[in-house]
Length: 288
DNA sequence: ACGTATAAGTCTACGAAAGG
DNA sequence: CCTTTCGTAGACTTATACGT
Image 1: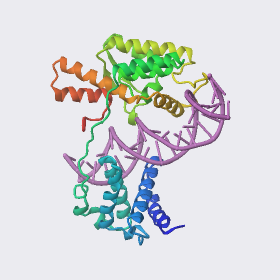
Image 2 (image 1 turned 90 degrees about the vertical axis):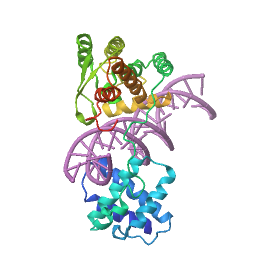
Image 3 (image 1 turned 90 degrees about the horizontal axis):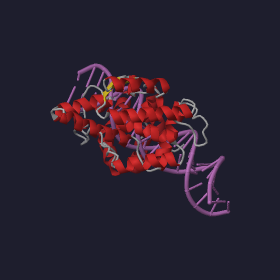
C-alpha cells in the first residue's frame, strides 16, 4: 500500500464512524479518494492522517478540483464531507474557521436552480415515433407521461393500470392529478395540468401499452419483464441515452408550458414560478 | 440565506447478444 | 466476422431537507 492509499484509508476509516446510508457513504469515500489523489499530485506527500490536514490543503484542494469545473454545489458537498472528518478527529478549528468557509474559498452561493434545457417539439416527436417504429411503445409512453403530466421518469415507471385509470378520472374531473408512488423523497404531490387533452391522450396510450405488456410500461427489447423497478429505470434511461435524449428534458418542456399557462391566467411571474415548482414537486419553494 | 447531511438522478464503460 | 444494439454496474453530479 502506497503512502497515498494509506492516507486515503485513514480518512475513510474516520468516515466509517460517521454513519449514513450506502449512497452517502459512497459519496464521502469518493471525496476521500479525490482529496488524497489531488493532495499527493500537488506535492503534499507527507500527509498521513486526517489530523495532518490544514487550511492550506483545503485551499489547494479547491483550486485543483476546479480544474475539472464541477458545479459549485458539488464542491460545497465535498468540502462538507472533509469538514465532518476534521471535526470528527478534533480539528474543529480548521473545520469551522471563517477564513475557510465556503465563501472564503470562493465556492459560496451557487445556483440551486436546475440547468436543464427543454426538449424541443421536434425531438419529442422524432423520438416517440422512433420508439414506436422499433417496437418499444413503452418508451414512447413513458416519455409522453413525462412530457404531458410533468412526471419524473421514476414516477412514470411506477404507473400501473390502477394509477393510470385514476389519473384518467382526475383529468376528466378537474385536471388535478395526484402523484403518489415513485416521488422523490416519497412525498406525494398534486399537479394542475393545463393541457388536459394531451395529458389524457398520454394516459390512455399508456394504458393500452400496459395492457399489452403484462401491466408494465417497461419491458426488455425481447418483451420479457424488466425485473424490478430499479432495472426498469436503467433500461429506460439506457434506451433514452442511445437515442440521444435526456428524458428529464421532456419534463422541463412541460414546466415551460405550465409556466405559460399560469402567466396567461394572470399569475405574476413570481407566483407562476412558485406554482410550477409545486407542480414539479420541488419542495417548499426554496430555490427555483 | 447558508452550510451540511443525505437522497435521488444521470451518464458511461463494457461485455454479451443480435443483426447483417 | 464485424458492427450495432442491449442491459448492467457503478461512477459521477445535482437536488432536497433541515437546522441554524
